[in-house]
Length: 188
Image (tube, rainbow, N blue to C red; front, side, top):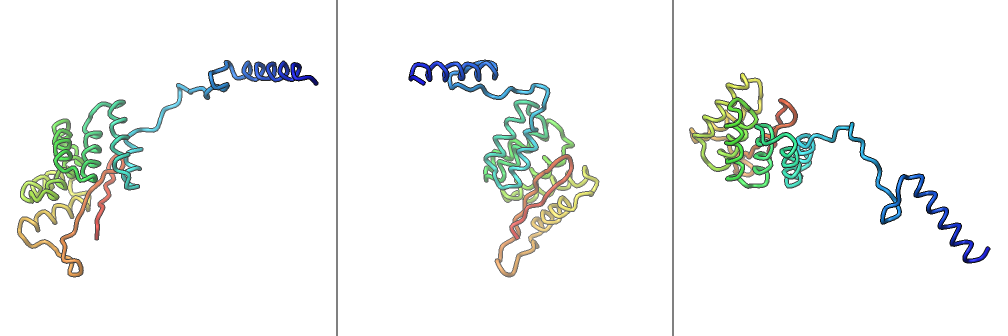
């Protein structure tokens, strides 16, 4: 077979394959079709999984993507505040969590996480009041919130538990997972 005949065969083969896939793009292939009927993964759920994996910066980005779909509701604001808390951005976390509470004054995760921020900032008295509110709204159902309240009360009374090995008070953090599950992260 001559060179010219080979070129024609390859050209025809390429055009035939391009015709099978719909159209020929600049790279010679087409991207797979998008199924508009399928739902994407919820950005909040992705963010919660990233938080559990310790990927706080990526979680924050996922929460912002969720905000672009759902708007900045109390749930999204609470999640953003939690990510800011994990990243050590206490002032930002406090502002965002207070905004979440303005959106929904009964949203327990935001209230509790604000208490955690206040504890981290050394504002034990205010944190105690915030934890009491979270505890009341939760009807005392969450052991983690109860423990946070107990710790805040102890701190305001200067009788906090100190680990005899490390001589440090325990550090704690409450992160929301799902619609009512709370996970207390501790460095004990």
